[in-house]
Image (tube, rainbow, N blue to C red):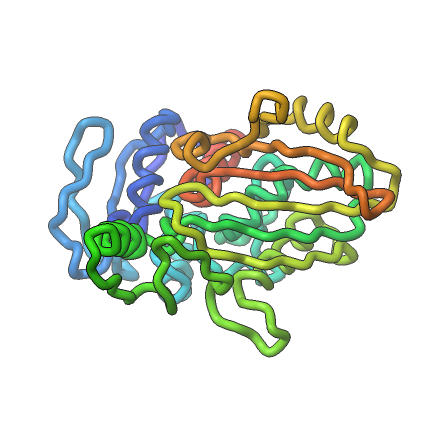
Length: 338
């Protein structure tokens, strides 16, 4: 891709929750867009979306959609990415893919710009956006790993329903209303009622007893940090929250570590905001992180059961930093490095 003043951009999956957020963030951050294509499935063709105050008509996603496009942001699911991303690359386009389709391919960089930006330029046409729960975790783990060398991570996630798309948002709204009205909660999206409940099950169960979502966090963390020796033990839980994922993280390191040093270290990192004032009930909350770009960290404390270990709480907007924002940041780095 040659250096330009402005770039032709396509968003595949533009009518979905993440696709709409991509359009919003491209506009917010004044990404240098020459032309914009909003692409989606045939059922969405003709819908009108807004970009910079102008209407954008949704077109059907086809293999021929990417002629003349410089950068394509994909958020239409893994099967769609596998079908159409190679065609986009053949058209001379660089694909930034938000699905799981290519994340663990050895020749596809898996990128969080605050963590491994140099990997962006090793792409062969496709750059993968990590899983939302992985992104917010590795933003915090990276400086800790660099200074203290991480041995083991134990993480429990509390993931909002927006991670499953608009249909899940609607289901939580409808179930909550129905139950408060004394009616039955209809269950369609999740295996159980999500309103007033927590479900320790995201994606399918694998033979090792972990879910696919949990193993994404294991494999992606190692790839992004470039260290296969890091042990990761995750439990992923869906909770009745609309926006923002929260995570309880325990990190054991090879070098001596303490909460004070971690607090000071993270306070100086870009993309991270430390809120750690227990005396005034100050800690990150999902309701405060929604709509924000930072990864919020609090409840930083020494692990009283392990010598070289700390605990902390991490919150981030899963649609922004966990998906759309990270993809746009990759695109920004891509054009700035030209």
